[in-house]
Image 1 (cartoon, rainbow, N blue to C red):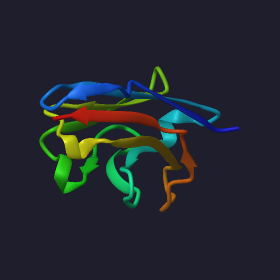
Image 2 (cartoon, rainbow, N blue to C red):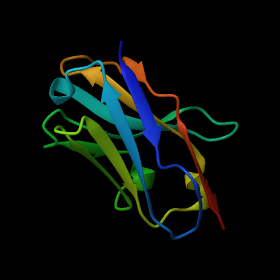
Image 3 (cartoon, one colour):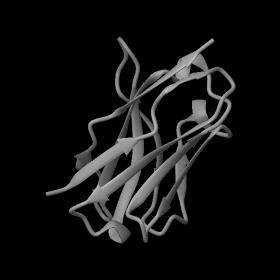
Amino acid sequence: QVQLVESGGRLVQAGDSLRLSCVASGVSFSTTGMGWFRQAPGREREFVASITTDGANTRYTDSVKGRFTISRDNDRNTAYLQMDSVKPEDTAVYYCVAKAKMSIRWEHWGQGTQVTVSS
């Protein structure tokens, strides 16, 4: 059974930094693509970032480019989202996602971790 467990969400002030972590189990982590989505109150869930199995390629939504960094440690079965210069509009529940290397859809979702940015 695949399990994704996020941590690191908290209340921060605008301009602060925080790092989200996602520990995966029940998957062959080194062959699993990882990513992050978020959902703000009253809004659709949106893609934030993704990283390929070997960490060589990453993608970001435009609103976080230059501020957020996705990474992974295949030895620890963990993906990270480093969030710098956060803004109030980054307030959301952040979900860790995973998919098989050749899959086109995100097959597994974590329960989410709340990030709140005060102005």
